[in-house]
Amino acid sequence: MKSEDRSTDRASRGPAGLRAGLTSYGDDGFSLFLRRAFIKGAGYSDDALERPIIGIATAISDYNPCHGANPGLVAAVRRGVMLAGGLPMEFPTVSVHESFSSPTSMLLRNLMSMDVEEMIRAQPMDAVVLVGGCDKTVPAQLMGAASAERPTIQLVSGAMLTGTHRGGRVGACTDCRAFWGRHRAGTLDPGEIDEVNSALVGSAGTCSVMGTASTMACVAEALGIALLGSAAPPAVTAARLRVGEATGAAAVDLARAGTPIKQIITADSIENAARVVFAIGGSTNAIIHLTAIAGRLGIPLALDDIDRWARDTPVLVDLKPAGEGYMEDFHRAGGLVTVLHEISDLLHLNVLTVTGRSLGDELERARPVRSSTVVRPRTTPLFTDGGIAVLRGNLAPRGAIIKQVAASPELLCVTGRAVPFDGVEDLASRIDDPELDVRPEDILVLRGAGPVGAPGMPEAGYIPIPRRLAERGVTDMVRISDARMSGTAAGTIVLHITPEAAVGGPLALVRHGDLITLDVPARRLTLDVSEEELDRRRSELHADRQPVASRGYRRLYVERRSQAVEASSESISTNTSAGVLYPSIRRGRVL
Ligand code: FES
Image (cartoon, rainbow, N blue to C red; front, top):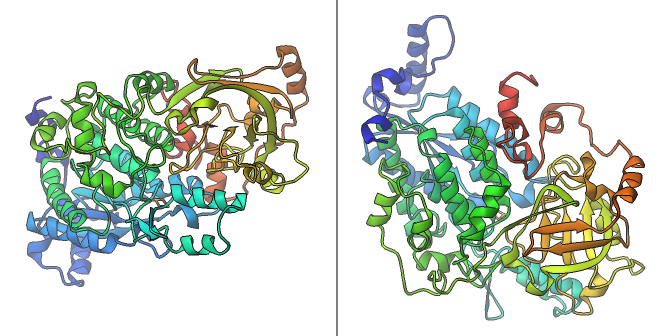
């Protein structure tokens, strides 16, 4: 596409700046008169009010320490906007933190996306900068902005710094899980669990490993909706603030060009982002979020595409939970720029980015760091066969996924006895029961934890090793579920089994002692029980597994959510994990 075609003619875009989206009084002149009167009351001059308006969507909250450094970052964005001749206008949105959202943050992702969408649409702005970073924030912001169809640029918060515990480096939250596992196994010094608790989170910022937040930061950069080089600088560094200033300036240019988000996020840039998820050993949650973002723009993303791209994209980034390093190491290794240079032959380099230049042009301007062990060269990848694999079989007829790069190699092809749990409460009450019939070679099964069953699809797929086995030194077992898993977790863990148990998926038919076969090289997950027996069990299933909600957003969620790994190519209304919940509402099918 030629650059002159990319920018819509200013006149054809309708009113800009303060004149856009006037409040309905039946008299546009009066609406603008009133709007100007109020904003002048806040001290703005006529000169300021004639500038391109750059909305800055913040998600700052005392309940969200991952965004604790965002006030300084937003100040840098404001500076960049003003240096480029624009007028910055901050506005708050819902803020969702992983550890402060009950019952689970995923339930609230679409609430946040609805907020972002409507606040962008309702208020006058010629472009919007989305500032945030905690796991659900970037997905929610991009989903909302995609639906609002305004020129958009993403700015992530940046990762936290690591801490020090007894001479060793620690960071949230892969190490949180490792230390908690040792605590459960009784192998930690008494009192040490409290000591490490104070060291795990070294500063404000998002989790310090390649978890979901870091993965989505890289996704935004790979999509071209964030500046190249913007994903990796840690939250509390000068580099992060300079990225903020540059993003503010770029937003003014973007507003002047009027480039709509659908010209940036396209089928090709979605493929680029998916390949980046695999190359960085990224979070399984990114598949859910990327499908939902694509769904907002009507771009189909099928599990078969995911598996095909994953198979020929090597894992190059050696960060926890798949490897050893932390995000600050990734930053020193050149961040995503180095990765993009390494896999450039797998990318669509002609896609447009927010600067108005192509990804290829941007990469030519950016220097990679070639001397690092954190980003491996293509000749010595961390893992050759894609970080994530898509499984199918009679236990997952419509698909499931496993992060094979973070699994135990010896457990990737096994048959074991099923030990099932019905929901997170049952899991919590029985997993450490000394009478539980469980052996190290068994397969732990959690059901009733999908988008419908929980509801909200909590990160319960990281089923703890039963204490009795942990005390014997067992550190990994095959675990399967219709839940999600934190991007910071590791283990041989099958997730997002679809259809989930709560809607009658085969996971609901598993009984204690059944044999289950996991064969990742063959991409298979099977329940080794005859079809006749499964039919008999199916006829005995109760139809009361689905939760109900009487009112409000929860009712909306319960009525409109969809399955976890559905391909959006089937229909926009069967997209991922409530990813298209809100477009359905806007089409008038709920409200
Ligand atoms: Fe916010 Fe991990 S809890 S990024």
